[in-house]
Image 1 (spheres, one colour):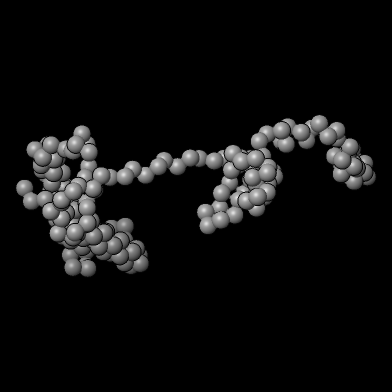
Image 2 (cartoon, rainbow, N blue to C red):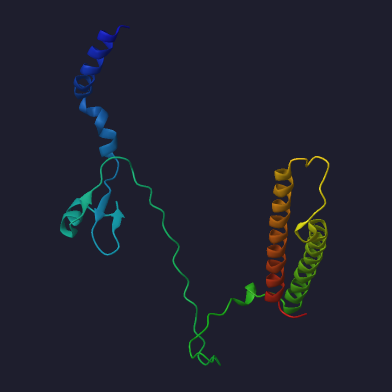
Length: 182
């Protein structure tokens, strides 16, 4: 196809699109009409009649359909009549069936503490090994480090690794402190 015939086809496309029968445009209009209603919470709905939409000042939305997802309604907790709350407000109480047995919770907390303490011990051992290799900023040079810059790069990597390990250890200690005492 030549450039000239491509240009003619491109010029004729708007004319061809206008010549399409109006039946092709009907399926989109046959679907329920979606309205955008003004207000503090802007409302998109298809559950009102055209007359109600005009009364409320709603506009129709044209183009692609809108997907509407219904949000779950928040649950209202029953306030106890006389709670011994120091703050004076009613604290929401979990349902009786969702409570965890105190012994089971204590066991879970103990297991979590043991895992964190094991992890802390491993990290402290790794930190000690890194600090030993680091040798206060003067680690031994290796045979492949004839270039002094390679040595300096390795020293900088070691220092960064030590800093990361120290941050990991402090994070583990914070997590252990959050757990209830055994």
